[in-house]
Image: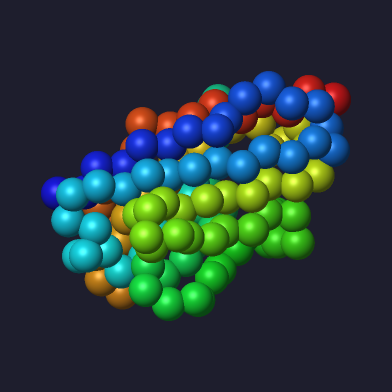
Length: 119
C-alpha cells in the first residue's frame, strides 16, 4: 500500500501563491506516476497535474498551465504543487494520488487539503 498525506492548503487572496505538498510512504517504489486532482463543491473531480515518479515527464490541465508547477523530491518521497496567480475558480479540495502503472487508474488517494481563494 501507499499512504499519501497532503498539506499546504489555506485561504489566500486572488493573485497569491501557495505550495501544496504530498508526502508518500509505504510501497512508493511501486508508483509510476503521481497526480494532483481537485474537486469543488457540486462539481466533479478534475485532473490538475501529474509527474512521473522516476522521470521528469509532467502534464497539466489547460486551466492551470502556466500558473501551476508540479515537482517531486524523491529523497523525501514528496510531490509538490506550486500554485501561482491563484484565482477564485481554483477554490477546491486538492488531492494527490498515485498511479501504479501506465494506463492504470490512480489507486491510492490522500485525504485532501482545502484551498480557498477570495476575490
